[in-house]
Length: 147
Image 1: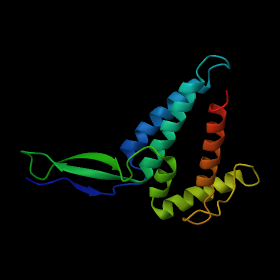
Image 2: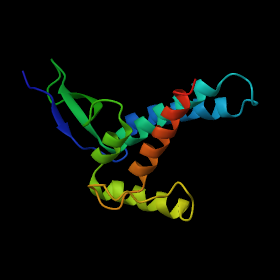
Image 3: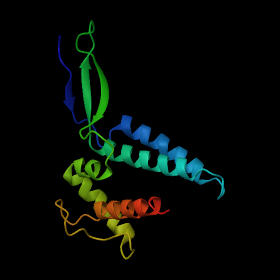
Image 4: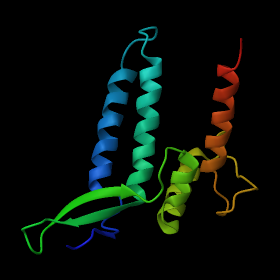
């Protein structure tokens, strides 16, 4: 019996991108609700899951599993090369050219804003996205730890 094999198919991977779009659609529905509706945590959760899946769609590979009894046919699924939910690890797993293009677009959109800082400790060049995620995670942690 043939074993499954992996191949990068398309960036972004359409299967993973579809899942990300669904979570982002849910985020938009929640965001449209009036303030005080009690939906802030579901809104944040859907936003983070959508972002995680968008990152995974940019670094996913297709898995081809041969179909028993159907020679030459495979079941195709997608899998992120990095396991887990860490946004920094997922961002850094995206192929260099795609990630650098994403970082340039982010920097161009946020030039001159407080969210666009360059991390001097970045091992991947002058990436502002990891620095932004880390800073916002620290802010969120400090808010959660207040009495």
